[in-house]
Image 1 (cartoon, protein in one colour):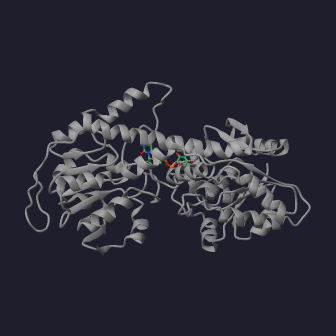
Image 2 (cartoon, protein in one colour):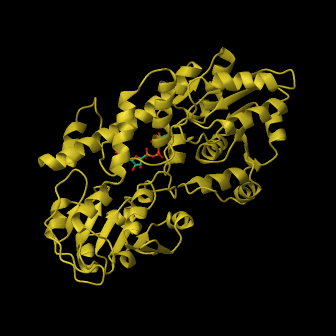
Image 3 (cartoon, rainbow, N blue to C red):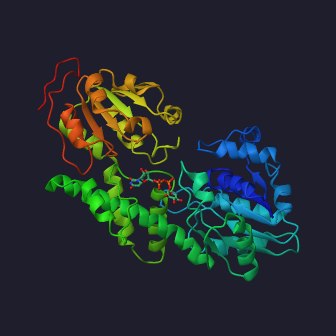
Length: 456
Ligand code: UDX
């Protein structure tokens, strides 16, 4: 078993650290934030992630994991240091590598024995070479430090399971020593390991994420056409999915991909290509389709209603996907400001994301509109003129068409995640608009602007 230090306790770092401890390694997680470290020591996870706190508590009690801000001693003693700090997007679409550079310098100034530095963060191709050179330049002690690439493929909401039962581990190394050490670190996971050189490992991460983003954008593009030609995207996806070469995952059309990875990684790879004088046309198309798709519901609803002024608008789901409190690049962030601008009186429900959303958009007046947060779905739907579904939380999926019909003033639903059956909604008298499927029969819209508006 190895002494492993993990730099950064975000999704990538913390989950990796906890999972390394779970398989028996001795782990120290480093973060610069005192409060976060104190929180983690008391068994509380700074991120919402199923199963994470249980493993944090179990491994902390067993003495296999610790948390500290004292990076010097944590790096000094490590056999391997995993870097999991963020690489956020810069305005030009490139990745901000300043956090990685800071950690690399701290490592160079702290290590006193041979050690393998493993970059888990998603970084542009060639960054690992630079990190290694950077560490060599600042190294104080006469020790061997090599850099390896080990990109992370976990998805938020299932991060622990994704790490413990990953479909593959990618390791990118430039020496037998580094390769063997990483193989040994991952040996207790009993997972398939793909060993390549560093640049290929870096590329595998971008190529995988961008391919998935492209798959989603492709389905969204086809979905938009399905609406126009009278086809149903879910039936189309089902028909396609029997072909093993296509597969049955990531074929769900909707209001586009959000999160911390796909939007950032598509732009970063397009940027890398441009830097090399090449245009990645497919990735650019994925980005363009996604940008349009995110405001699709707002545009559909505005076309249908003309104005939102004075309408009670129920919003179900704020996060970029279920199972997380993360709002990064969520479709709600695109649509809600547009609705508020148009005078909507919004009642938003999200089981875990509302607190984060309220930090950006507090309760109260926003321009012509008004925003409130509610703790249960019924409160959001009660008397509403229109409902938007932005996230497919389990409890939202479980709602029956009759619930919409019974609670809403006008049962008019715009679903960005295609979670309901079109025919059943129609039968229950709900006017149902989704993505890539046919819309329900038009209802008369009651209310709005204190008048009884009737649009048809
Ligand atoms: C993703 C990758 O899955 C993971 O491998 C990588 O390491 C990080 O990025 P994550 O961002 O957590 O993980 O979420 P994911 O479940 O992949 O969903 C991303 C977005 O795509 C969500 O907004 C989701 O709603 C959307 N999506 C996903 C679709 O619109 N359709 C689909 O069929 C699948």
